[in-house]
Length: 290
Image 1: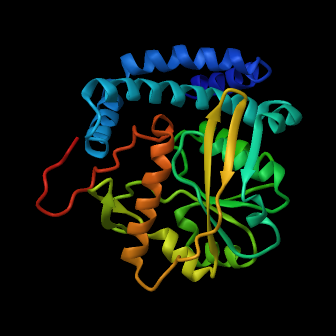
Image 2: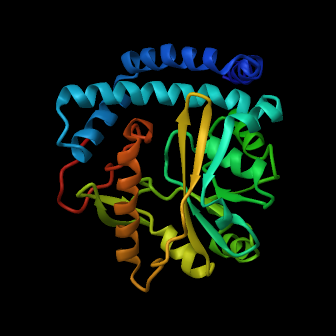
């Protein structure tokens, strides 16, 4: 396993200087193979889309799943130049657009960064191009070699600070109040212990209410950050800060987060992380969907 992991990291270093068009072409082939071979994840994505986008035909959803696998493969290969490529090349391929002025100064800022497949490109763009120290919450990988590679990549620019759930809320909130923006990805199913059920595309989804909680505890404004794949690399769009968030109702806040997330996904559905078992945790008495 360690030999394979070392070989994988060396491979990513080796392909980092290749033209972007080559990497995207390789990703197209790799994504097609994953679509054919990774049947369990293909099934998960298909079920998610059937639940969330029932207005689409089965043929449309099948095509969307295939495009999703291609985007997944392309963004994975792009981590080669994001984390190992020439810094100037990386900068040219990453565009920050939108309300970038929301990131000026040292005000406590909570970045709502949904699980679009370009999420690591977005984090790299921010840490390379915005003169602030960013933080995020990560899940350690089981393989220590892979974990070290990902951690180094995410800290490549700006010495980003990586928290885990074991660091505790107080440490994360203190960093947020001190002016270190928190790049938060709360749109996943982490089980029933810390979640509440709110609709996601009309389906009850176990959702961690961390966006509302951290915004309130950190006295932070919430700024959505959306990263999309483009032919030339990535665009990371900074949206204006939400003016009606958080409130005193954590359930309503979390439901609002999901409703706004739906509008973001609708602009680029093939780039969302559909292979995640978003509905694995079900309300009491409801049947499993996977």
